[in-house]
Length: 78
Image 1 (cartoon, rainbow, N blue to C red):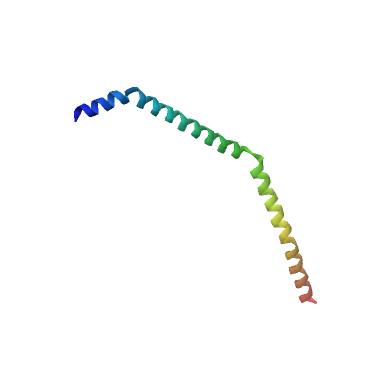
Image 2: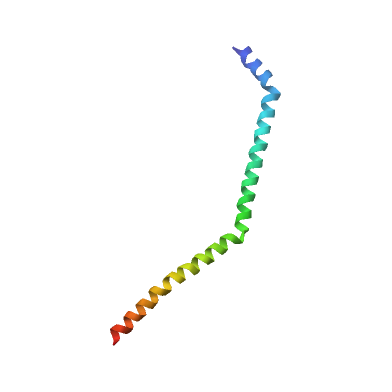
């Protein structure tokens, strides 16, 4: 049984380490690309613009409601 393990280790010696190194590099590249993309999106003005437009739209939608309420109050006072 020991011969099987020795053979496997000898057979896999350089190949296993090369495969491991290859996949570690690939994972490292993917991690770098993902982190860079998150950083880039964080610096993007698009998120800020969307937030500003959302706030404007909410304010615009609230405006007619506020006018209706002020008219009702004015009519109640008459």
